[in-house]
Image (cartoon, rainbow over all chains, first blue to last red; front, side, top):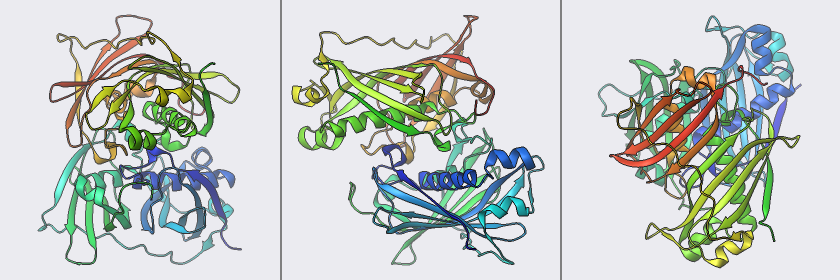
Length: 257
Length: 257
């Protein structure tokens, strides 16, 4: 039996969009997670159930995001997800975003683990937690590309952020969508207005907590003439919190194209 | 003829909610503005039309927000708005949020003006811009309560914020919902987790721009035993940007009550 697909339609409001009327990367992540939470609910294994019954919760360790075209304000998109495969400790989940004509806009691969909320440690994936997804049990789940590292010798630019109350999720942790927000904001406005991401590989290492200061560093690598790459990291008290590599393309003119 | 009402249904996703699973104040403002934008479109006088034809756009000068109960994650709410009345320079718009049983959750009064985008000056409200709303033409529109001022002698606490790329709206200005975000974040997490706003009066004075540093100051006034009031201002380079008074009530226990 193949893994269960789950789909739903979402209309993108202005407040999920950037200055160019495209969905922001943090909101792209949020709406896809929404679809997976709705699948979890439908299959009877939502967050509240996992916490109440087992004291565990899913945490994402990495995303690989392939963007053909970022949807714009007022567009209706179809969000689809499935829990494709898993092994003893990790689950591989895929997401798709399609326009109304069925064209693929975004494809996301992701790796998840189950965390014991009290011990703050990864636990093995129990069969009855994963069974409803009809995920394939495999020896090895796909490896997502590792983001590049910022070389110690490179000239990084950096901005500082304090973790705000509004960054904290219902589970008491920093919402995962904040890390890419800090990463992107470290780039100049002129760059962000003129470019859009084509590929994002992001990896989460250590969580930051309310009130902490984080440093978002970026190096722009334009050694390849055909494409611009940026390499990012987020650190807090010299502890690495997240890393990412982003491939950019030039942005279309502003407006509802 | 009474002013046109416009209503639509919205389901609140997790990413519009705070740590207590209640909709955040910034998102409350965003979803209500969404309803008014949809009314503008329906009546043929949306933002793009106003800019293209007249070079003007609506700007809000103040909100008075009365909260009976903040809706929670996954709740279906009905957002309603009408352009109630106007005079030569100002328009009075009302908003309501109701639950599925028809109970009023939130009522918002607001004052708007039309700004010439090039001159950055308020312009008189032309008849053909306002006519579609069937708003009542009046000599005086209702006065919203003025937020208190922070006394020079009082012990304010303050936090600093840099205006981020993600704070900038499609119209190139800071999204109005950021001012209450900065205001609330100036309060301690323990306070925010244990209280929720019952009434917010907020007034916008001067816009801040990308890259600016803003200071969010707050004084907690608990001189009245029955209720806690906080008084807020946002300044940038010693210029007043926004002020607010918030009346608080104790928050229900965390969860989906």
